[in-house]
Image 1 (tube, one colour):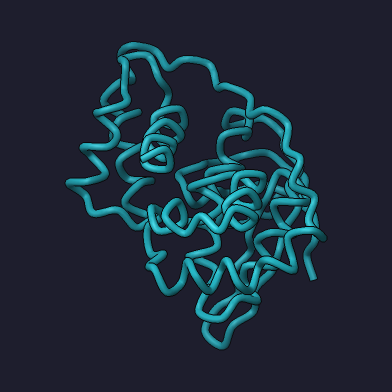
Image 2 (spheres, rainbow, N blue to C red; image 1 turned 30 degrees about the vertical axis):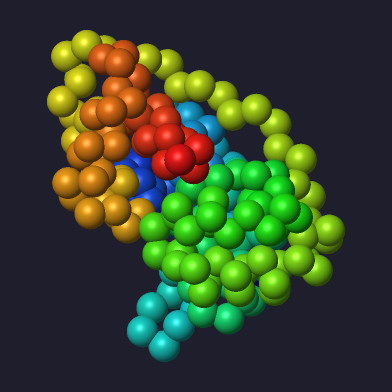
Length: 202
């Protein structure tokens, strides 16, 4: 079992990233809550990981914080929730916000996440109610990435739209969401974060 990796970021394109660990390239998938805090390509990062072994593939998931991985693993135990949906949930809201939704039985906020319908939201509220107290939901403030250069605007927007599509949004909706929150100075990560927040706040 691979539980932790420390290496140089070779590339990052949400939800995938490539980490060079001692000359070996590890492909990982990560939620946006992790991408928000990743350093730049070429810098070193330590990720806590979860290895999922299936009949057709072995997928490695990376997280910046232990409680993110703990929530991810707890979500996988919920009937009908797979890794893709667990990543979408962690991308749409942080652990503290998710815990708040469960405690307040706020299914509406959960249904704003791509792939989470009314029945799944209700199942999450019921099955996660007893698991939330065992999770550390205190999360530090997310660091803000430095602003992207002006001549990188098109690429930042394209990366943001691509990431939103990968999270389950239809291309037209992803484009509309990204352009609605872009002020001309945001990085792709900031655009994605703002777009997801706008949906969460509804």
